[in-house]
Amino acid sequence: MSEDAYCRAALEGSPVPGFVVDVHAHLGEAAEFPVSRHDDIDLYIREMDRHGVDVACVSALPACVGGLQEGGNAMVLEALERWPARFFGWMSANPNYPDSLIGELERCHNGGCRGVKIHNSVGLPYDHENYRAVYEFAAERALPILAHTWGADLVTLEPQFARYPSVRWSLGHAGASEPERYVRLATEHENVFLDTCWSQCPRGLIEHFVACGLGGKTMFSSDCYFLSLSQQLGRVLFADLAPEQKAAILGGNARRFLGELCPAGRS
Image 1 (cartoon, rainbow, N blue to C red):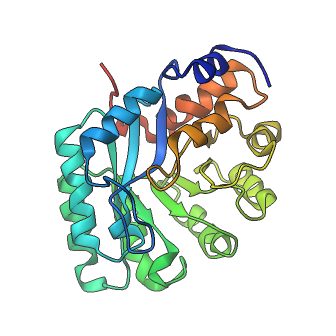
Image 2: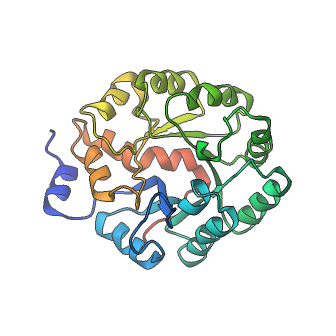
Image 3: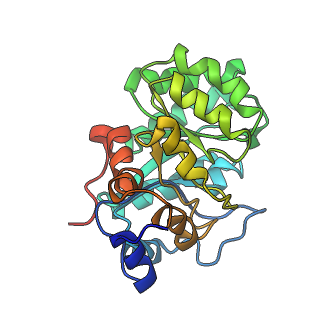
């Protein structure tokens, strides 16, 4: 473990120094994922402040895994209205409802959401024809897409990277299955980035991504509230990396990934 300002902040229980972006976080709860005080947005902000997180990129669990698109996305829109400098909104897309899909995405985009979240819990593979409208919506507006990935999902997702080059793709839970496939995809495709959240903590995974030349494409994420913000931050803060590499993972890479869409964070 390298001894630096990030380690010291963690050991002291102080906020993480520098600009920190959590690219994969959640609001609300779903039937399979009960979350205490899930509707308290101000508590979320206090947790971000306590840990030193400037911006959280949030989607709603009821929408992305619960199938409740309109109600779940409304939670994200409320967060953006109340804390526009602190939240980036992922609008959840459910291609099982093609007739209402674009209308819902337009509602969310008009309300301030600037990214699209897709999740295999809807039951359709990422190369299903119903997803085409989602990808085209994002491509036309140069919006990023956060994809839940785990194993076989990468097979159906990979063709989309070249098909929609104006879309920046973040692969959720990078390394959770077949880590070398994630390395290959992020290496071969300029518009593909990796996010770090995963309930397990295999030793050296984040360092491995950096060693493979992906230090500029690996982004911190927590899956908070579903996973612990403290635990997921610790995977980066105590990684065997140089301070400048940690700074890139914690916020610099996400700032570049989101570009002008990135909120300002804490004043």
